[in-house]
Image 1 (tube, helix red, strand yellow):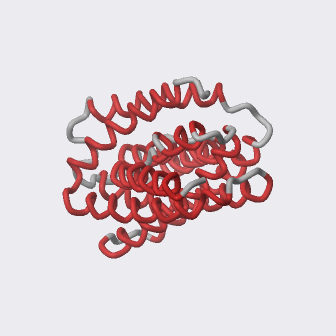
Image 2 (cartoon, rainbow, N blue to C red):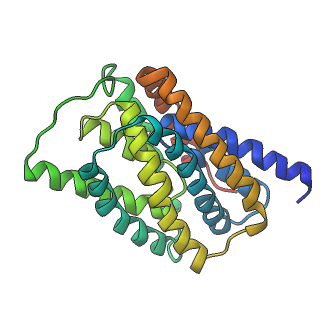
Length: 253
């Protein structure tokens, strides 16, 4: 690639990952189609994109950890429940055509945006939730299923985690995005990227621009989330979910 094309990748990465860090997911909405448009086969584009999103998690985490107070118990649940699913999903994507899953995920992602839009007060403040064993088991199962989707599909799963944390665990949008960026963006995506990078094919010479852009975009998006609060994060989440769902439904060239 030429220097101009690398700069173009850098700009796309900053833009895509900035919106992702603000909305709590959706980096693949713009970044993955660009990689495919530039000539990468879908599996190569997906593996390259997954590795780049680790930098998104690092940039956003750096900003969120400055201001957010994370509960160790919740961090452990999200990590323990979701990480096995991520590894299973990343292993499955190497041998299973993902198109049917993308269509289903696209419809579900659009539904998430609609669900949030129809509930104006959702995620605007922290609320109390049940402390029962049943509630904990269902919450962990939901994270495990989303983890499988995260490891195997391109985009939208970070948004699903954000809404799951808001609706099931009673977090505000800003708080949920913080958890999503730290654990999903950094740890989940890191595990999936490691597996895909080991057993799949990666366009390594494109990664420097993508990694730098992802880190910068992640940091800037997280800063905007903290500065403007839950209302902006909620509206961005709703827009990005619908656009991500449409992108997933569109046929891959």
